[in-house]
Amino acid sequence: MPLHQGQEKPDEHPMSVNPFFGETNPVSGMVEAPPKHRLPEGPLPPTTAYQLVHDELMLDGNARLNLATFVTTWMEPQADVLMSECRDKNMIDKDEYPRTAELERRCVAMLANLWNAPNPSAVVGCSTTGSSEACMLAGMALKRRWTRRNADRYPSKDARPNLVMGINVQVCWEKFCNFWEVEARQVPMEGDRFHLDPQAAAELCDENTIGVVGILGSTFDGSYEPIADLCAALDELQEQTGLDVPVHVDGASGAMVAPFLDEDLVWDFRLPRVSSINTSGHKYGLVYPGVGWALWRSPTELPEELVFRVNYLGGDMPTFALNFSRPGAQVVAQYYTFLRLGRAGYRAVQQTTRDVARGLAEHVEALGDFRLLTRGDELPVFAFTTAPEVTAYDVFEVSRRMRERGWLLPAYTFPPHREDLSVLRVVCRNGFSNDLSDLFVEDLSRMLPELRRQQSPMTRDREVATSFHH
Image 1: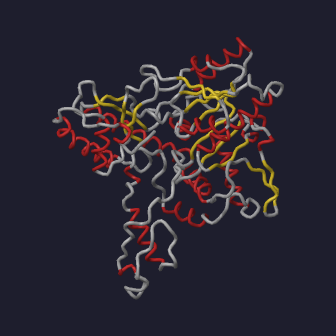
Image 2: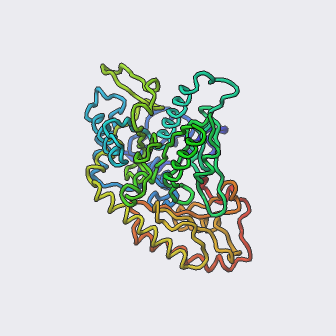
């Protein structure tokens, strides 16, 4: 979460309170408006407090029109009810809430089967607050296994662990390397390759490499990284040098898409070099935030010393997490969604979403002002930029003008070595229908004539041109 500082100055404009916010007496408790940056001296009626918060939140963007986020923005009413019934259950209290713990265990088993584990019963896994925490846990396991293998020379100044990944990884991997003192070795983008190159990744590996991260669904453009080719390159590296480098698959989005739509794509535990996989239940797992999952092929891949056994509330509880207390609602919602949809249901939902993404990409391309980088045929995500002949405006202006119509359309610049490329990205999710897609194209088409009449792009500072930062 972002860090926030307290208010430096006292409230200059205290909240105004409408007298109709009161319970019975329309002027009760309305002597003065409540402060915004310090606790009020006394309580407010619940309807007053609710209305004040509700009204301020009206200025947030509409989540359903947020084309930047991968996070689920719609669930069925029955899921809402279940989550409401379970929001007071603490996931850590497995002895107090044994059935919630059992649903978590079943979800892990279902994912092990979905990801083709050779022995699903041997898989070790857990729920997390999201795929970022899951990545942290996977990275910790990779580092601890490397530490074990190199106990005779680590820690020392000559043995600094490193992790190899593409420069397109989500920022959580950079955080992991920073927090756990691991050198991040990143494969840069080159030309029209916007993710990791397997051979380049293998060439970055040495005796201090704890693992290689492959991304099944890059957030930059929605493309899958070639996990099987990556494993093959590392197999060849082992034959030549003896280095045995494990692979972790960050399937934050793709691990809940590929099993249903790309069944012949080999990326998961069918590859012996894949030691662990994570996903976001709250992305294409179709659950509200926040829930993620981390699975290891077997107990060998998850060192036992990382697992804490806590005598908590009368039970011996193994736990592997960065936090402790969290609600059980999201795990229950994940089990509900698995139970509700099954393989056929997930396949239908994800196929519909991919079809919408492909169709929308074609419509955007047909406008003539834009060039597609991807077409939504892997993740239901596509990226596009302005065509070479377009010089009157840039992607940041498109993002800003679409926001005026309610659409949250991210614009951003690619990382080294493609800082020259600025793009727009559309994430299609369950609930983003063909009707909404048509409305998006209508709004985009409606603003183009005015943009075309400009003499030159009006963007002065790309850092503030959009509120989206990748």
